[in-house]
Length: 69
Image (cartoon, rainbow, N blue to C red; front, side, top):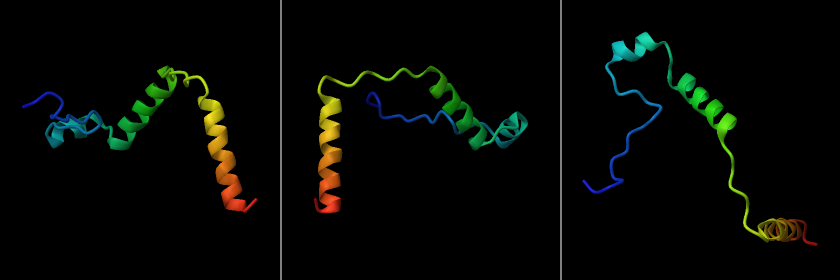
């Protein structure tokens, strides 16, 4: 197999039913824990220079298009 073609899900368990039933955590519990970890530790990369102004321009143009002004 070429690199990157094998997907192994991190939230879905691949063990037999007895193993994941014993853990007493379903997909929602595992997903909630993963979200909590991401929110607690993620540090977003800063936007490149001028990106804020470009975003403001897109929002302004959309507003003009939607309101007809």
